[in-house]
Image 1 (tube, rainbow, N blue to C red):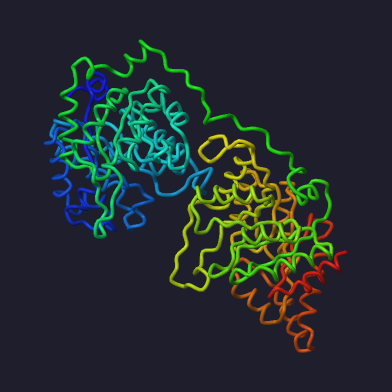
Image 2: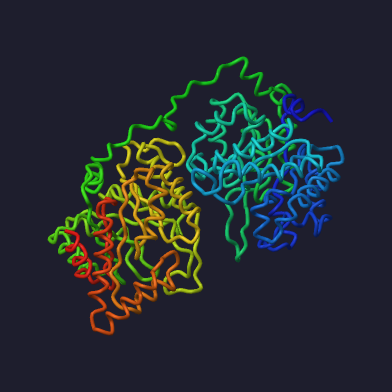
Length: 618
């Protein structure tokens, strides 16, 4: 067989269709690791490859889409990366029998990488390199990097392959109905970015052929790279509990002709497509006029320049709103004034009148800002809703604590744009606790990104760009706060994460509650050079039981034995609550010349305790 790139420049090549849905149809449950079948049931995998070769596929993909170290770890197979990928390549090579090219299939890691996640680009590249090396050992002819939503992650995969060999690379993003990637990156951005880095650039999965054709039309004016299109067989339909793809082979083939008319050189299928779909695509390709089938994308590019399309989607970022103009808290911290903040927990149910009244009283008593934390999940009002109500009805500024827990990246972006539209300006971005959700111990938690990733998102919004690099119009004016924990068990890790948050765009920091100066000072010496305004968290104990609970059951909180003994003596004398206020006040006074503000909790809604702490600071 000719080298792959020579062949694709001479004629349109047909790739295979779905592997996962074919194996599912053969009786393998969806919760199994399909990649591991390369070791456990290789004959069944080989049978699927044979069906596609007999259908006329010029290219088949290895059964290794999810065979990277991260995804295999979820099945307890992290030590089988090399074996699964190498065998996947060998199975495909034996099935191809010299009649089809074999593409080493590599999909996303299944985790977020920087700037959205805590995994570095270099780490991601190492994961991809491990998989690509094993596919090379198995003898693949090229690599197919597909179904990526994050252009940065796809870049890491390309770098991994390029660092090992010069085999051809097919790089494909997965898109929504609007043609943008699942993270919102438009083809006007990802197509030129991949041009020159990959030999074939395309889109696959998620959608059917009609919206994919519109994206291919857009891409054809933006790049001279060879194009690829691998749509799903339409959108899945739930039929008696099974996902069924209903686009017929003839329908898919009709779009294959349209793809080719817009410069596609590699056409095939993704989820739901079968050997019969590929057979019909092959017939459609053969039926094209020879001169049409032989035109290469490069020849077209030499004869006709690319259409100069105005790039409306990747506008350069605009300057951020000056910090001192974003909020009263931002102005106070910028000018060096000491800020006072009191925390109000969202109520159970939807009645907010009592909390709003407390916020009014806090304002009357001279408190600068009300902090609205993410409360325990359950039947509680959301922190965002309460923050808006407090600002609108009590006329006091808030700091909204916003957690990454149980939210995906696009949903968080939408929430924050809505919060900005309703007047929220101060944010405290936190990752969120990994714990049973509220009153529901069987519920699970989900993290798409952590606080570092979300800080990067908000920084982009403040420069007028969404996560996909598209302009949002006027930039947001969020004052970006993050959390830092002096009592973290892994202090080195906490400091490292804090530095990443500062790099991502954090503008002030709030500590978790502190109960002794030594714990605070150990952290402060290490982060003082960041020159980030620091607000210290204070918690006035209600009782000795409250102190013991904080000491023994709240992760990352350090309460010295001497403080618990002091609370125990005060309780015996009948003055535990007053002693809790005194301890918090003493800490606040000791740190007033060092930090830029305090955030005082109001345990059980006792705002008088918080006000008593602040009164002592004045």
